[in-house]
Amino acid sequence: MDGGRRRRRRRRRRRSIRLRSVRRRRDRRIRRRLDLHIHSTASDGVNTPSEVVQLALAYGLDVIALTDHDTVGGVAEAQQAAAQQAAAQQAAAHAEDTLSLEVIAGVEINAEGSWGDLHFLGYYLDLESPLLLERLAHMRDARVDRAREMVSHLRSMGMRLDWEEVAAIARGDSIGRPHVARALCNRGYVRTMQEAFDRFIGRDGPAYVPRRRMTPSQAIETIFEAGGVPVLAHPVHSGGGATSRIPEFVTYGLRGLEVYYPHHSPEDVDFLLSLCQKHGLLATGGSDYHSPSAHAGVSLGTLDVPYACFEALRDAALSSS
Image 1: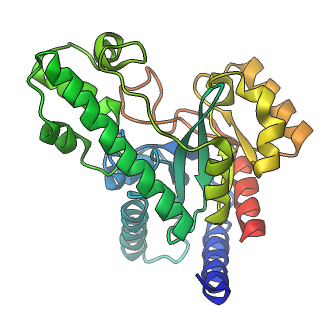
Image 2 (image 1 turned 30 degrees about the horizontal axis):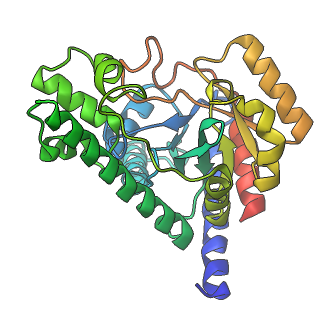
């Protein structure tokens, strides 16, 4: 892509980010609420992107990020749904200062090193980035191949499972093990999705197939080249002592840590905040929402994430555009 076209895209992104920020500053009396880690049916969530927007509005959220696994396929739908809701509210109220839900274009990229699995969140992405689209397409194809192979293994074990059934459950363009697990539940081979993982498709299961992933440097590069802000997801619960490798990730371009997370203890939060201060990283947070029952007691709007996290993230996106 020529440099002029890239510069024009980035100027449009900066104007868009600033415009949304101005609209949100009109009324400081209202406490801002946010969730920067949400999944939809575009990957392994149970709600469509439009439904995620409806839930976020119902829970009184002001800012969300749609961060599906290895895909940005649901972002446009979510942003359109939020824009339509804002237009409807403004028309009904006949007011220019109606606060709307901001939907940040995000992704959660699965990566792997010799030490284990890692997830990197990307925020304020340019959805037309050639590198982003190319690498996510490769990841999508790898996911399909992996799921097909798992279905083949399960069929060889005598289970009447069809690939078309798994694909229909997935609905989106980021097929994964949860969709295979759901198909096993639907067929009555297991009672719960967790049982499907424990008995068949977990890492030690007979139908398990390793996943092809990006390296950490590739994941961060992909986000950075798309004009986004790369953040390490749930560092305390990542594989292989991820926190000890943060200095390495910073050299690749890491900009932040997901500090506020449902399964981070107060001690974890303090530890991660100290790492942010030490390495000059911003702090983010989110529920990792997949469905109302995915995590007991965890849903949209239940995790208290400081609004300053959003402001720092927005400023980082502006500085990198």
